[in-house]
Image (cartoon, rainbow, N blue to C red; front, side, top):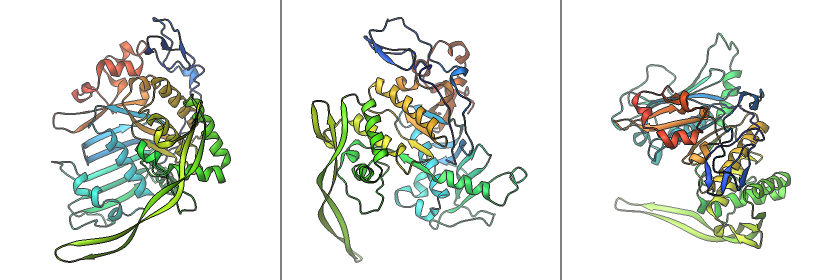
Length: 437
């Protein structure tokens, strides 16, 4: 999560999105369109050709690589990154941990203190790999070779750059490092790296949270990582950022064909106010007050069914609007960490979502997206270079590899889309020593 500038320009008018058939009567065709009545044996040219990748690639300060040691199942992992990188693998393989570790680095770069960041459920003891040896390390390197490194150890560091002790057991330090012979300045490079890395958002969206009515007392409402507060964010944009709200309406209609518009209605919101607490040696008691207030409820106006409250909308519809609200908003991050990209979306909508993300990455040249996914249809829209496979070794540690490092990749690269290769070979081979991160 360092900084991330990016952009790979891919023309979906020239890019076929994959030969995989969606249904018996629907095939994915060239030129980025899904058409019905396709021939069964139609095999469009799906893979990226050099002429389809524009030279407008701005990778200054983008995260180039990640390294993790003794962080959850990531006992000793490193991987390179692209402007758009998608991590796939079985449940429990460590995909979400990669995003979480990157997000921790971003919060440290933004100035959050370790004793605040690593507390309660994120306490270092629970994050440290079971049976691990040595310090817990989170590290990323950007395209200007600036490294952001966080280390935590139960033993005191020899260097004086120790920041704090979150508790009596751990010593921690966070630092930025770079080659002073290349960047002789007095900190401008580090400042740019910290600013870019700090502009990172982690989304693990929950449809139920996205659908809730909400109320914000903040001057500029914000959405939580689980989607809470979406209604307040969009309602505020309709009042203050009408162009941004109009664009979300427009793009939502493209991805959700039956949707005509988004609107709002007033709704009751229950808020909890903490009053006081008292404790003795035997018990602790907290006094809270529940208060009903009036907030905003997001409403979907579908063709033939206007006025549908968000709790009655589909999961895929809610998740699509949630992602768009982050990427198209006035406080757009420079790095988006998206857990379970394409979840609850029809395969055709997954194709359209990837196309949209690429268009936004061309428009916003400092945008980088790291995501996890489970759909082979979605992978068919990527290049082989953009796919990272995760699996567990015999000791339960995560191993990360690139799809293009499969021993038979050269044989099948011109015949099979990334999703087909993954479906055929899986990811267990990565732990057998074939992959180079």
